[in-house]
Length: 343
Figure 1 (cartoon, rainbow, N blue to C red):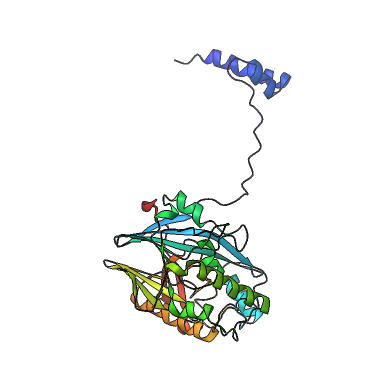
Figure 2: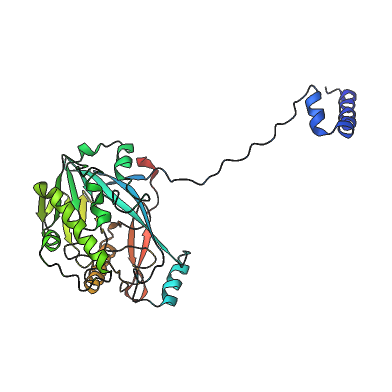
């Protein structure tokens, strides 16, 4: 039984105390509690992002998408979608709930264990483009893999954000035990005496810098470089797919294990809100913009028709999803839900 008389006395005492001393003083003095401490100031939530790798499978093959970081372009034009009117470009971005004054691109490298090999597809930018990039090596280690354990590195094309992570700050190979693979057409183009830059829409200084960088990094791996051609398999289950336009020897990769397949499209499609719905919109970095647009239509059509999973090097991390057809011959990007079972 409750002692109602006693409880009433307590209530009166509390009410009187509150009137006299205030809540904080009473709580400090009375035996049933202490004065509450002032709430601490919540910590700031801004800061550098962490994490940056995502595990998944393709049949029996094990994959990890490793984020090298990201790039931001402001303003958007004329580097991206120079064919678009300002109104059409902004409309496409607004429809995807994105800012209209900039675009952000992720950098997604692929590490895959297949056929007894550990293969890295592209290396990220290393230290070539500032502190927002160059995270592959540390995140690979965080995911449980040492760079010395990588047995193969595929270079989809010779742009700095793909080859910059091949060498460390002292110019030494980051993956000392790897065999390197790149398209023969790509290697011949960048190391040739007079590569055709006539359709590139970047300045002379940028062209010269891109050429010097490609030659430097290709030379650094040439003794362990195996040129490949479309249709060739890097190892069983990893096939080279022709994807020219962005560069002459740009390649994609088809990864197959059992009944599952993944098309690593590299730089065939850069941005989910611009490139799927507007296949004709190109980039100033495209060596042959029209050919690149034709390749984009071809590969996205294949992915949609065959139900292939697709990985995009610059799509929002982890960049894995599916493609489906849309009105007017365009396509839609359907990101794959995050899979926690591999974590």
